[in-house]
Image (tube, rainbow, N blue to C red; front, side, top):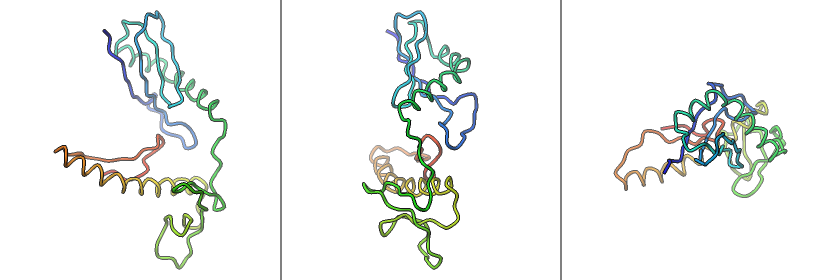
Length: 181
């Protein structure tokens, strides 16, 4: 019986470019009676491959080194076709989902001491941010809230299991959404 091959890797050291997919592949290879490799992009942003029975992890790494960029491009094309609606740039007139409702983005009043955050049915951010800075700020705020919710649970489970962990990071596939510890 052959093992399932799982491989997570970045593509040729490419840095992330805002507005594009992260240069990362998550590959799951299944052995079959095939003599060639069949690459199948999936809705969950993973790649499934049907590979010959003799295919091993070293073959998978070599395949990614040689053809990773082509596989990555195939995945991008597949995902673009699945989701033709590109995200619209965020402005101070936009809304973002928050606890089941769309809340408006508002400019933080000069006299307000509370800083950026979700409150009073809106998300408040400093004035003068670009679209990408608004997006990054909203993602950071959401990630910070998720981090606060998960940190206590992870601490509790780590204590119950008698283990220690060195970091907790929330990642959207693009970048970290909350600080690591």
